[in-house]
Amino acid sequence: MAKVSFEAFKKLNDVPILSEDDLRSWGSIVVSKKTRRTLADNLTGYPLSASGTWATYLGNQLGVDPPDSLEAQYKAVKENLTNEFIIVELNWAGGDNGDKPYGGEPYRWHNFHDWAFHGFDAQWKVDESGAAGHHPNGVYRLAQAVWNTPIEGAWVTDFWKGMPSSSGPKLNANLSSISQAERDQLEEGMVQILAKEAKSLGAVRPIWLVVGHDYDRVLRHARELVGDETWRIILIPHHSGGNQGYVKGKASMRRWCPEALTAMYDSIGKARSALGLEWEVDTAKQTKFVFRRAS
Picture 1 (cartoon, rainbow, N blue to C red):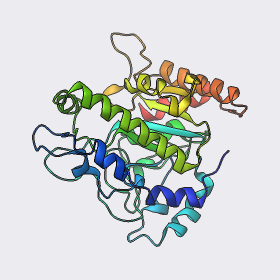
Picture 2: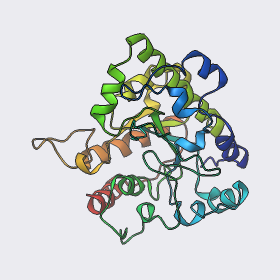
Picture 3: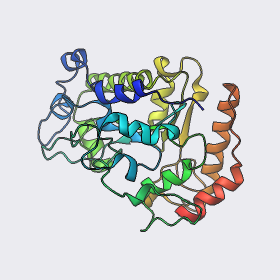
Picture 4: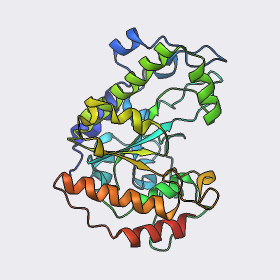
């Protein structure tokens, strides 16, 4: 398994989400109908580490308050991190009330729709008993899906960074309020940020795992991410609590059901085989473990 170097770990905390060129070219696009805030208002000054986290249990290792240092954090988790996969969620799910989307504390790693990890965070605790300490939520389901597989320790990020979107309809309302040219510019820019994250990670031909939304199609056309190897874009069923099981008795590859999980693991196995990498995951066993404890 390709490891994440300390230089890459540090770079995620140093590299800004929006470069100076980004701020000049499309940072002024208004991304909130209600508050008229721009993307620059929401993202200026934030590094990549403010909009992402690692698909592993982070509570005790990185959630210390105050954090000691990046060196201490890296030492605690380095054996669990990989840059062979990048998981792409949809959006950070914050409101458009004028608050900035990310907490901004140094040396913090933020998950895709919450604040930084603090203290003991049970939502990422996964063990054979499946005991999480509370009713399983979406983050916990994702943790179970990657647990004890080569996916564990992957970088988790968002597609729409800095877009106020406390719900899907609100995200769509804000997106529909901008022109098609601006929408296209934002999509292209978000893909460029993903490419910057991969470069910062030191990721070479990573497999992109896109969670339950339509932007897997956008990524398939992003030559800077996969070139002609569109099979390195794989859909993950959405892990939210409202997306469990079946619709009208039929399986959907975008819903959290055994068929979708099985298809996901099989697709990942085929992609890794094409890259000359091992998978060695018992698909049936892993699917049974994940769905039994996270449904």
